[in-house]
Length: 272
Image 1 (cartoon, rainbow, N blue to C red):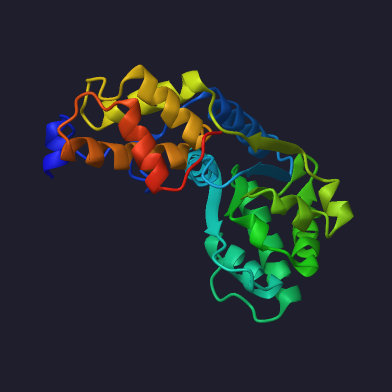
Image 2: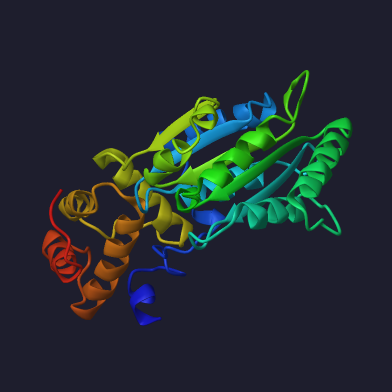
């Protein structure tokens, strides 16, 4: 693509698709990873990550999954795609992801299968974690009660299963549907947007991964990318991606504040 060549980019630097090569280890994600890993290693049972749209929850979930080495952990990631998920469906899905074959039809039988499987994993010296992304969609009291039931499965060392839930702030409302479950949250972490300095580092990081060592945005342009995005990684990507294309059209190097403002206007973004 000509606009990439113009800026000495080998590939799109600001795609919003999940690509671990572009994982940016800022303080937020580092802290969150440490806390989530601690929750799993110490068999705490329930850890929760909340954050606004585009703050990096899915990226974090996939990163922690990659770090849970299969030699030490039995881990699975579920992504909730719609709000009509039932408790039965979720239990079956968890059972399948944890390697249970011929999953039973009856919920009580599934719970029995899960308990036996979790004991089997524990006796093999592994820790079990199930990560659920977009968990705010699970606005169902029965599902929260089933989560609590899963957390009742324990041994002397702790919970046989650690649930790591990732979602928007609405996840707090879902957990509040079952107060005893909410009280069992062992670790909770909130993902906020970047500050200006971290936004700058984030942009530089993605450009470098894409093969560009140049400063293709002026300092003032970066400042306005941060202001229009509010430090939200997904919006930073969208603004930068559009600005690179817009800058190519007018053959602008480096991309300046005016171009960023034009892109922001086209995207209906306001200064934060």
